[in-house]
Image 1 (tube, rainbow, N blue to C red):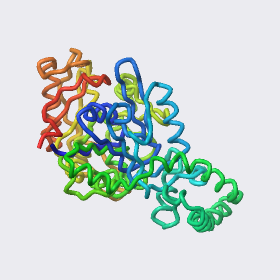
Image 2: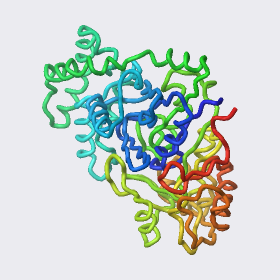
Image 3: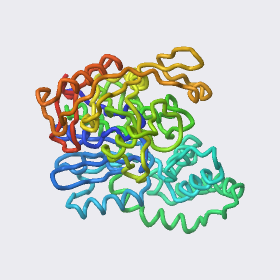
Image 4: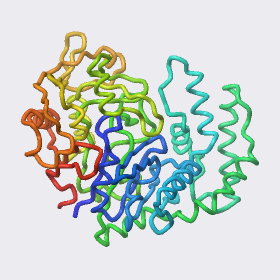
Amino acid sequence: MANVVVVGAQWGDEGKGKIVDWLSERADVIARFQGGHNAGHTLVIGEKVFKLSLLPSGIVRKGKMAVIGNGVVLDPWSLFSEIAKLEAQGVEIGPENLMIAENTPLILPLHQDLDQLREAAAGTSKIGTTGRGIGPAYEDKVGRRTIRVADLADEETLDSRLDRLLAHHDALRQGLGATPIDRAELKAKLQDIAPRLLQYAQPVWKVMNDYRKAGKRILFEGAQGSLLDIDFGTYPYVTSSTTMSGMAATGTGMGPSAIGFVLGIVKAYTTRVGEGPFPTELEDADGQRLGERGHEFGTVTGRKRRCGWFDAVLVRQTCAISGVNGIALTKLDVMDGFKTIKICTGYEIDGVHYDHLPTAAALQSRVTPIYEEMDGWEESTQGARSWADLPANAIKYVRRIEELIQCPVALLSTSPERDDTILVTDPFAD
């Protein structure tokens, strides 16, 4: 059986939670490999709705091992809050079904402070972060001054890490007009949570490779979306981690050969949260309709999402970079009732045609989308579980998307309910 990587192929919010949950029933191990608690996955299982940020989606399934890999930045207080909420919903969580990599960097209160101080100081140049400290935590990781999970087990190591970390942050805070960090208070907080966090700590790279050798089926769960990737996203309006499929290997300590199938999650239209370019954005009645019918509000932030027509140029681009083998097309039912549907097939910038989104911000700001129009459908696709349940024009829309993005549809989702899914290609099959 192939191991499967799930990545968002747009700006996030593509419906990864449902698809990962759908796949996790057939997996043995579900691993998060990047991002932090700025990610949001909503799972609808029967009458229950679970909202996850840090925990892998498989945590709600009995008999599965959920893994938080070293590519994640971890806010321990947010983690414990999330665990408490799930336990209140009847989910049992302990070291027997949750494992955290020993080398996972921690998000501390000072990271959240810095995130918010910078955004406030940026004014009109703000990036639109969630203010949860993800970016500053990744900076400290690369700057070799982060505190990692394993550091909490030894006071001498913790003291050394704190000295190096605060030497950097106190200087930054002074420049931003903030007071220095209370070192004693921060150390006390870390020592307080250490025993609870360390019970989950494991050499994830070793355990994951052992799982692979034993023939366990592994599902790698990405967060955010490919267009928010630190290298290939719409920079600087991006997240601070690599959101492409290759990070699944690095973010868990496994080699690239561990990846068998890359599944890109793609919404039947386009949305994004926060600042940054958005070629197909609609600020008219059609955009309003997409937002209302799609319930487009962020799982974590509650922020209203910007909405627009499907952008085949961007999805073709992200599928190529992540090596996507097949896509899961979600929220097709939101397109029900449109008389005419548009798909972006290319761009025009200063009279020049582009078949990709150029890197230069100055060019991105002048993009005009080139649209192809298709007839919509009046019938409902909500709850469809086979091709025979779909209107002819809905099938034409799906097939045209496949042609334009040069990638086949492996799964088709027609509602938030996990069983309202049409399986075309089994990602776990060899």
